[in-house]
Image (cartoon, rainbow, N blue to C red; front, side, top):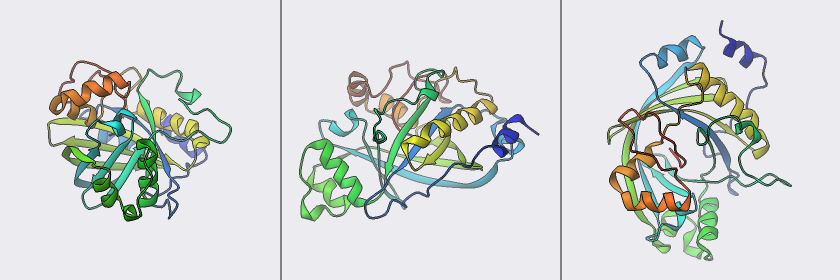
Length: 264
């Protein structure tokens, strides 16, 4: 039995809220994830560690921003997943009395190996956060996200499909993604309900990443980073200047040896 499984059995399970359970006020989940490049033995390693295949899916994501890129330059990512609905990924709010920033548990890992994002799924929470970033008051007609998208003149800037295989191991999920623009990436993810839970979740995410053969030295870009670099280079350069993305040569199709911030 692997050291990872024994440590998991002796640890307190993570609280993993289901997507979309934020309620009318939109209490958000916080996503803690680390990306890696899957190898031919990744799925066998997952099974050996005790992971179970959660399913396979295909979906298309559409992303929106203002013409002057004010949302993504502020690290806010508004996504419509066809068949699933709207989601806004944004920097998590600091805990009460805290200062935010990167948890201390990440300090020993290379930059950009792990990321944390708040995930908003309720229309009220999404519209409120968008208006806050853009400095406008919500209009009465913006009770649903499409109304706000039209009223704020948000425009689609990215659209791509993904084929995904997902595994579950305790409170962790591992997604193996193949995008339709020729890029493959994998990620270990945990969802927690409060910023105070992030360090423990981060420790488990990075532990599983290492158990899958990634020692923390390899930094892998997400799908959005690669998509923008290939298909919207001016947008990509704007995010480099804003410090939202870390600049590197374009990765090969399997995503080796590149740093990144930004969402999936």
